[in-house]
Length: 227
Image 1 (cartoon, rainbow, N blue to C red):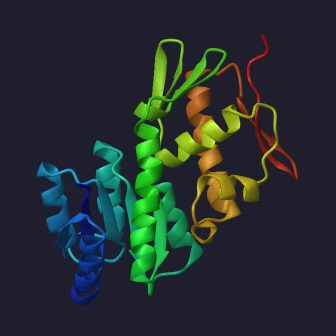
Image 2 (cartoon, one colour):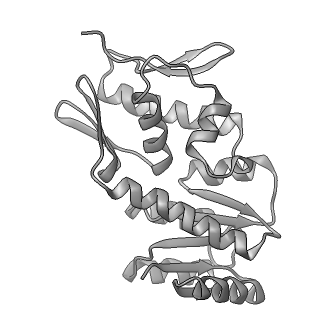
């Protein structure tokens, strides 16, 4: 049974989230303080975390950073803040989805299921090769020769999309539609930020070739090494 951790300081909302997820067949743990969640996570590994941004003790971004340092547990961030910068920060830190309050509890359950489906698909053996560059989705890594770097789930989906369609130009809108279930949580700036980080990781692996090319006014494409 999938185990969802809810970190939410609004007791009434946390209780409703718990009840809906329990009714959907999930095991649920609820914690109301960020510092207590950090302690709990030292000894427990949930299947997914529903994480509020503003928390007493430690905020959601601190918890997101801590989770990403130790693993790739899927995270859905929730917040009453709707400014784009907050969405960008949350997603750049490795959140897999983002919901702005107030939200439908049925939609929360649907988002949890959708994120877990994507995560479980990445756990299945899946390898994409392009010359000496190899994307290993099940371990969220990309390898060049004897070297490898770790990727976030978003970076895995992004690189897989580009690598499986070499030289094809994808606009930012097309990328958003392909790798996110809900385009409301991302913007062009978010995609640009993910591309920038991904390119840096790939250049660290192979400084002699820039795999991801920016096409002015159009988008991005993957350029394999010419053989």
